[in-house]
Image 1 (cartoon, rainbow, N blue to C red):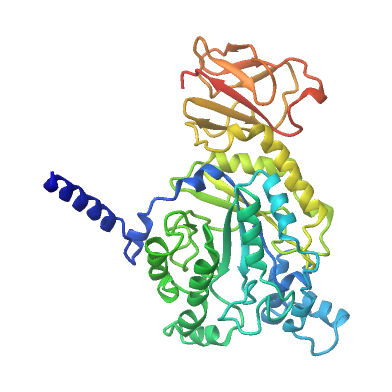
Image 2 (spheres, rainbow, N blue to C red):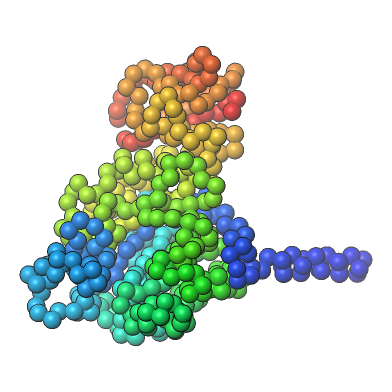
Length: 456
């Protein structure tokens, strides 16, 4: 008996040792993605920083204001500063105006909960270097030292974890446009790693140990290889020994050689939407303001994506194996403006009816229908779902992908009863659509048909 117990203990210990990850890409890439992430499908991205003070861009990327102004030296930004600000005004002079006087993390948490999302990713530090927490490695350039004088990361982490069912995540930029240590490493063709060793890596340890996020969304990697960033060393610690080692997910932005190849889920590029099924889990990080991640005071209504476009983007993403990370940009006062809030609440209303065909699903054998456009498929166990973006104009909805057999049933999520159908010659199905009054439809945008008992 003792010998048997000893052998079992040895087997358990061997398994524990076997799952430790080494500091190289083959080992890091072998880690299974925690299951919660694929089940979730929808996350909320939040871009907030000193860039939220000028909150200006002629046509894109307001969060890059400092770079457009002082790095690229673009004329519209120079003209903006010359027209509206005193001479010798610096970017650092914007920071005291990041007042956050209306920042209510509990209100944010409630809005995000209603959206139907299951995780949030908050900007801990963007390329400007300003940290939204009192970092020991960002002296005088953090949210407690200057600006709101609050730990904006910590407050939101607490609200999300105590008031919602969402998982909390953090975005972190590896590089900083104008940090002298980074510029020195860059000037030496990244042969030294002073910035990595004294600034960016210690920050990542700090936010992981302090806030215990379950998503670490890395960015700002593209100027240097992952060897400069020492990415695999950090990820090995993250997966082996960190306080969130069993649940945390990471993306692929860990160096110019890693993007779209290594890490956890793939992002490849902003607003990545391949349109076809991918071999690895991926994420479409996109914006409600179609031009910018940070808030823009000069945005026009037409710049914001409609709820129909957001849902269409989402179902295509899910059907082809991705998650969608939908971005909002709060104001310098800490307000999620009403248009953003409206989109999030509309999305939540839609998810309230249709989440069965979204959460916990997998890509089907067919992603989109070729007979009727704007129809995307998912599946869960043996059940197939078709999300129809355009409501049928006549009495029939004709689809070529479902293969029918006797006993198959068709329903619309949120609507009582089953629909009658006939098999199309060869393959496919014709679904009879009853005359449903508009006020009896289960939702206003995109309708999900549920197929049980299909042959495929």
